Image (cartoon, rainbow, N blue to C red):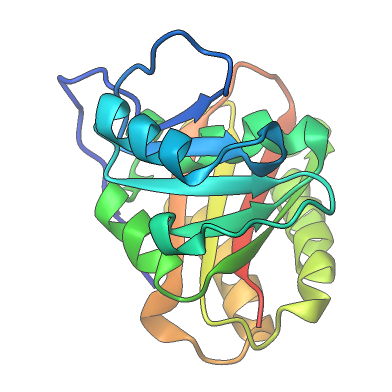
Amino acid sequence: MKCHMDESYIDDTPNAFLYQRIMDRYPKSAIGCFIISEDWDEQALLELKKESEAWFLVGLQIDNSEFEHLNIIEGIIRCQPDEVKDVTELLDVNAASTIIGIDVVDIKSLFECGNLFQFIQASATGESESDLIKVTTHKLVNQLSTARHTKGLFIGMESVQSLLMEAFAYVADAVEGFLSNIGESIYYRSSMTDELNIFHLKAIYALA
């Protein structure tokens, strides 16, 4: 399990940014995300990586499109079309704003657990924070039914206020109690949202 005290960043360059094939220029980022069905070929990806100065590239699979250039990207994340923004925001670990956070080095380590990943998420609304956390955690664990033996997992927690360590411990205990022992290959981050009376859990896990 990996988490640490989050630090403030002076550099406002995003850790993750979603690039589109039709862009005139590619702003800088640490992790370059792109939708693989947008006709990215090898030359286009090499140009993207060079201009954006991205440390590595991650493809987002929103349909059944296959991808032939796995040798020049770090991995592929499966998600729904309306989840692309959620995936990119989860990977943008610079935006983590509370006590629990990770950095881009940890994201690189996560992708060393496999080439293909799945994105899932769960949320609940209500007045009681403890109930929100319990309900959302239960929903997420149910979605992890096919990931019991995953080699890598990254979970992001979003709440309207700084997450208490007791709440983090509840989520971590529930998730880690469900999965097989994968130790240091579980990563967590925590961030804040403007949405009231809601708790979000977003996760990426390596597919076997």
